[in-house]
Image 1: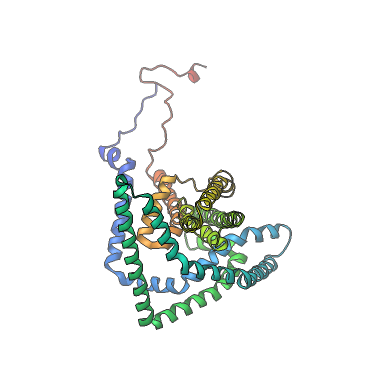
Image 2 (image 1 turned 45 degrees about the horizontal axis):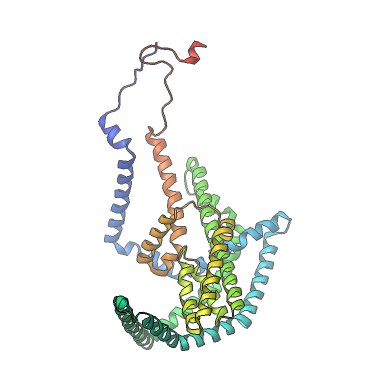
Length: 396
């Protein structure tokens, strides 16, 4: 009979080192301490913030273009088309589409937007008056008071926002000109960054891994590839779904004869980039416009919305997005709330891919910690029991 001569672990090992909860709390505490120290020396982050303000916009634009066009470049390369020639051909096609869009779509959107902005106060006033008429019943007086209070607050906040914007526009013309110039420079610079990303982007993980020791290069390269896969699947899928949603709303609004169909469809597509909440937010202007026209138009808009939600939820999103991120819907809602509160609109749009990247890194760190500490694997049954009984393998 074999005896176990291993020395038993101490309480510190069992309660601290080999405890998953304590490990997570310790790592979280260390991260928070690092952030606290960095907050005490903000001048360390100033160069990085300055660099990001200069190159952030072209990098984001180039990154979106890369995730959209890179599958096409890879597919053409399989058919023995050089990457440089395929990239140039795609650039020509995209340029022609932009020229067509600027020449045809933008004037239509501009006209519809100008008309909607001019008529929106009348739409909202008529809708609120209609709802107030429905709420004349004494039993619904509380809801009527809340609606009147909401309208007053909305009018006050809108007036304050318009006056603040006007004052800032008059007082900071130089800042506006500087912002416009920086945006123009970013838009002009993005195609050059995109060209080199499409041509040499597949070599970027191995190139970045060279700064690490040889024994860590393979795992670092695998980590970068996984991060790129997660972000590319999400960004590409969300953009494709948003485009399909915009087309569906536009076609649906055209069929029912709703005004501002193109503008409302584009707004629905853009807002659909916000998971779970975008489509419902996009329905607000459509519902207001439809309610102003007639109750039957409102019913038709709701039918279009129900059909779009059914097609998107049952067919389009599962087919395009799949389950690549594997993030629970409740987690997505929390991410949107936190990222939106911390970083505004940009946080809402980039919160999910940012969480995907952080999760990949955290998973890799925990995997390394598990291998380093040990004790997380399920123990294999001993070949000999404490009573000295032999296992079936020994009997055979």
